[in-house]
Length: 114
Length: 109
Image 1: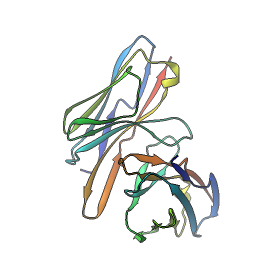
Image 2: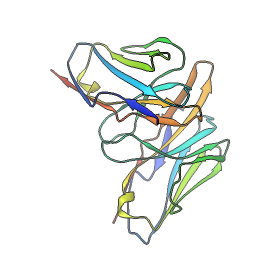
Image 3: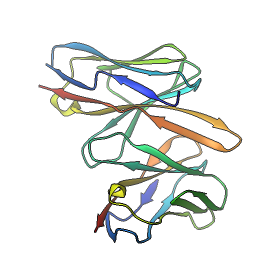
Image 4: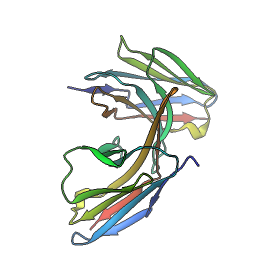
């Protein structure tokens, strides 16, 4: 299984809503990431979890709250978002072996905030 | 500051070869990645270089020169499905991934 899955694929929410994005991988990867990507721009790192602990928080507003319930799951809780938060949210996981590091991205959740 | 430079757009012909360059200036170096991203889709991992030299994977090869802060992605026997954006990313000394803006590759018949 060489796949990172994300749900939902699309999400439309109002600025007062609370929603969650989910990410799952069963490759035994111990590093998982949340990225935000706007159209025609590269991905922007938001959070990194290493061995289920938050290791990097790229000064992301508190309206985004990550959670790593176990080594296979990564959630991103959303609350009181702004229209400018509309973007593609990508989850990724990675492992390092003797051949180097390999990162895998999930298909993303396309979020629209109204 | 940290900087990754790659051309904004390139055009090539089906069946030909194209080389996409990437130069970087980062605080430290812990590997360079190339990703392919089709419009509206997530990036797909292509290659990882941490030592100087050429890594070959089928039609795609990636080269790294750490002393020059330079990498290229070489695509051979181009196919129409290779039309996509190609992203160069460097992991710095803090193990953070610094992304280039991407190169949009257009393949013409």
